[in-house]
Image (cartoon, rainbow, N blue to C red; front, top):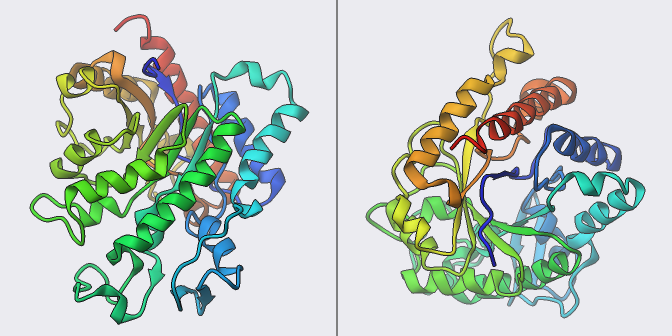
Length: 345
């Protein structure tokens, strides 16, 4: 399978409330901006999307109580994937059915799922299940501390990924923000390196096209080394703040079958008093300079360009109308910058 190169995508979340109409608006915004691999707009919690259906199953051993997911007994994954977990894929197929000409404007579409480690980090468990492991990272014991539970969640997510694969998703991402926390420069919490690699490979094993893992924030060289040893095809990280600069090298990626999804527009946008919308939007020239740096550091053939992370946080800061307009302008400038440079670098 050929590497994806010099194309655009997004991470997933958007600053609109969760309605079908808002999903259509945000998805259309991505496509109108020129995104090559748009992702269905993720307007609900990345945790609830996959754990809530389990907690609704009385046989799963998982309940949702007082805002927490709590494991009361052995976690049991249903033999049939809950319909709620694949509803976004059905949304995409219906969207293209209603708008047949739009499908020809893009190269493919992306599904954003949540990885097993991150899901497990949100499940509270009894102390006795930890088998003596100390809850250093969390105030209370979490399921991420128990390998067998994380493996079950990896198999659960692999079956969901298989469904999205069969629906035609070109890129299927397992978002794993928690890995940036448990895999540090000096220490890895709860796991051996090979165990993490094996579990991630289980989660993406049924993806026939482009598998991806997104880890936001500052990442360590240890995490990079682990991800490079997985079967994942796309590694997705943020780069606009410079903290991850130099963490990958050109030969490391060029000699592998992996692409790097490289953040070149900011997604963590802070409110500025009396600012206009364009004050929050990177000019095309700035995005171009970030792309040029990425090509110099990594090589054109291994790069995908995108926002650092999701845009869901803009809803609280700016509201739907202004937040969505900021996103639309950012994505438009991203696509213009890529187009300007594609045949020059």
